[in-house]
Length: 299
Length: 106
Image 1 (cartoon, rainbow over the protein chains, first blue to last red):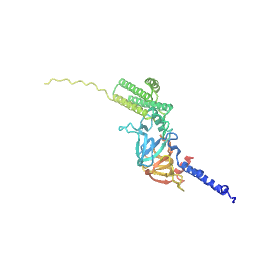
Image 2: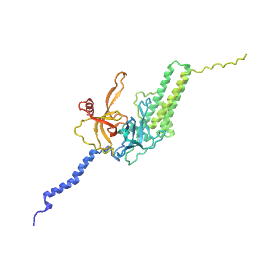
Image 3: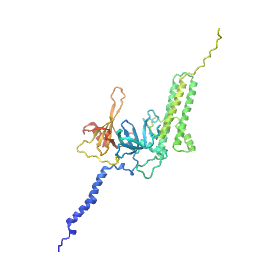
Image 4: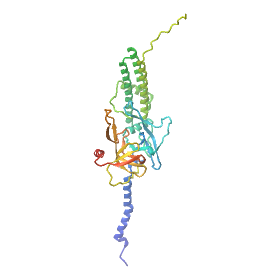
């Protein structure tokens, strides 16, 4: 009878341990290192904060939103889309304003399908950036709910972020009024074809109209931020006098949420209309009544 | 999957930084990685910015700017469709742009 017991053979035991380790430790470890080294954890669906992408086009246009790119087709899908619109000369001092896609004449539905051949680059938008904050405030204004479970989270702005944007919009309104009032003052310094009294009356009427535009814009901001009519009234009455006489000239511009930006843009257009009308009245001489020709009896 | 599967092809002996010339005429500088799939990846992206000089006869001022301080505060990683890339070149370590990027990343 042999004393050799294969179960107690050290070489065999070591071999069994090696095979077990290779199958359950080494292979998973190598796989884990490979996967972790090649997965961008910040981009994984379901986990982490919102992933807002910037899609830059070859023609220079940039769109922001939730990107769905399986990589299998030549098309990217961007949802909840925002883009920049040229706003040179705007009261914010920024060269661009943010617009939400969907309000164009053709009223596109959500889900922009983009040909990848026309894309220059795809970037991740920083969540503390001006664009991300303006989008978050726009969602707050639209009462967008943040779902508990989603492939990509939806960030909605806090009350503080909304207050910052509201204040920036108020200051933009005042900068616009201040610029229009300055233009009127410069016109009054010129030699005008009307009397000083007439010029003063026209200027005072224009300034009143400008203040009315500002008050209406403040009421629109109050309505957009969801204040009740009583609260909106109190807000306008409290805010309007605080803005009077201010210039906010050296204040850095804030990229506004599209709804607030729309209110400021509308007010700026109205300021320009009021200013143009006043300038026309100031620079045109009043038509002096010419004596009507008296009929002469024919010989 | 395009966004999170970040497998890049290893390249031996290449320079630290590359210049990526794009189809729209723009050039980005950074660390270029050839990913599997439709996109290439650039990390730590810089670009040249020209500003008009106050003297109309003088050449515009050119400076190199690190991407990230724009209004949308982009992250350091940029994905570029390979169809938008004209060509890629290595930068010499002694090139002023490479030296600036090395110093700036410290």
